[in-house]
Image 1 (cartoon, rainbow, N blue to C red):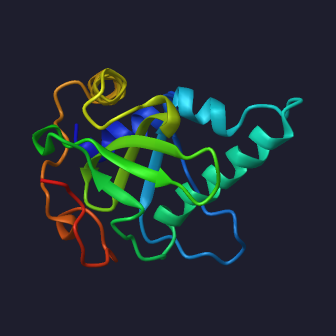
Image 2 (image 1 turned 60 degrees about the horizontal axis):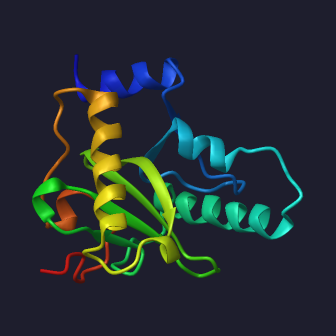
Length: 171
């Protein structure tokens, strides 16, 4: 079974959910799939916290930027240290609180978002909290795809069409 077939299977089994652009007439240049817990956050019923509901809507729009034909920039997408693990973050930073969505690439132009965390909970880049969220991203990946490895590269052009030249990795 190919990784594409495996993704389709995980969608059928409600383990992964596609992110689709909601804007009418929006082009779809890339694909993103989100794991169950992140999907639950994005689709939670409206509660009493209107500010959080607004922030979740803004996060959804930030994720839709990836699947649309917007250019991808280093301010939006970063490879986390160590690069050999292949864990990337989408940075939802325009609104507060800042949110990091972690994930990995099974193939070019396909991002699997595994988990998220508020940036304020993560501390410095070598903190225990950062290590824990990266470990969770890899654990969710293995749970979804077993022995299929993600693409490991620091060359953004091997992962994302329409990426702007820049430094996507600190190292």
